[in-house]
Image: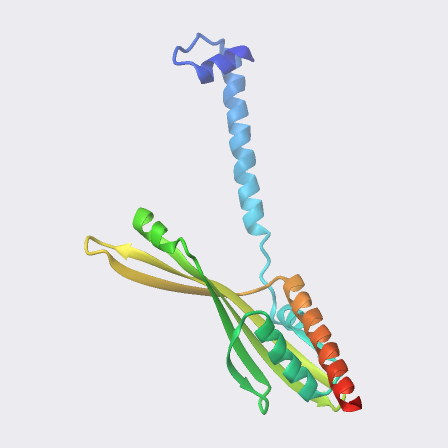
Length: 196
């Protein structure tokens, strides 16, 4: 074993016995095979969600009236720092976006010629009355970023915007739990104001 260490760490290569060198090469091949297999397996295990799985993940039902759920969703989106670009109570759509700028983007652009300027998020609600006391809520979340590159000798700036749907069920569960809490809070406030 010490002769393998000497072989790897010194410029002067001692004469290794054929058997030791063969073992070294075999270990190297096994390690390379293991790493390659790991990469192939990890890339192959990424699962794309079916439309049915996406619908199940992005849909919930709230046992309250439509008006209360809609106003609670608007309030929740605003409290999460989103800018509402459209909210239509007639259609049930709420569309909002948020952008967080990267303060170090200019430094990265100067040093490396490219930078992620900001991360983005979009939220799209579709809220529908099913009964007087039952409302369906569909939420779709997207995440992405805005990046830029300096191209060529003239340093022309090229911007790229990427977005992808959020596919983590826990994220949707957290949003729906927050929405239900907001509905409860608003309902309690409405009941309290009607008593006064």
